[in-house]
Length: 141
Length: 283
Image (cartoon, rainbow over all chains, first blue to last red):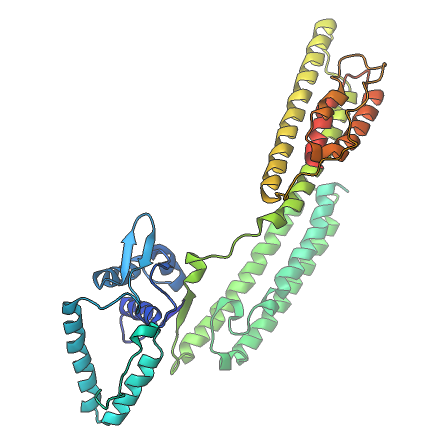
């Protein structure tokens, strides 16, 4: 997995690392069971503080995407084929998605453009064959 | 001219030339270790500093080479090393000057304004690193083993033929002591050598496992040792006969070598069997 961050970007570095790993998991580049480098190694490779990477990994662990252990290191725990998420997580995600879409609507982005961009983003994810997204097919986003 | 001085005379121009051309083989976007945008790779200050670096390091290299050649017959062994050290230090100083000036201009003109700087890494390089090609290391290790064996054997033969260290006050006792010490040290060194070679061989065999060991049908134990053998050397053929089948041809060569050594070296009681053992493991 190629992981790139912007050290001078507005988004905190730990958040960028977390986002890139989540995108890699959704895109199938980092499936469940695959390993990630240790926090120290990744910190050295990216030229950031060890605690920054540690914070990203801890965030992913709290979200249930990563399993951290002394023996096997950081291992991906969930991917698109791992089944439905926890109900409380789904509720939280729906609230955040609503806010994100509201930002687009508030900025004047047309609904068709919002749906089209959502469809393009979802097309890049690696869903299992049984869970192919029917996004937008029924006219309901 | 001593070997050290000659090495210094050769090394000084070589290191000087290497240091001089080093910036030419680096990436254009990282001149003197300073990362610059691609459109600034041909900036005026970079060209100026490159030319200045080439001129300075070439002058330093010529001066140091001339000094090394002129002073090769004078001074101690460290003189050529000192010249080499001064040359490297001066070249690094020139590098640092060029780097400092490019960095100053880069920061003053804010070359990265309007650019996004991104740091990228490949996590698979850590979680699934490429395997080191260990089998390709075995030929080099075999050459090292053979070289070490030949060098040490030659060295020990020279020691055997050199003048013994005998005390005039007690010549008989010191001669006995010297003979015992020489024999013990030689055997110990050759056994150590055999063990080193054996470890390299076993390390190599772990990597090169054939499907089945060939067993030559015509292989037979070696003939008995020649009558002229005084008995101080163990029977070579017996040692070779217990060798595993895949090394039959190897042991035949070893026997020949060992026999030659035995004939040539009977009076010195050189432990030919140990030499043969060591040679067999290193070929």
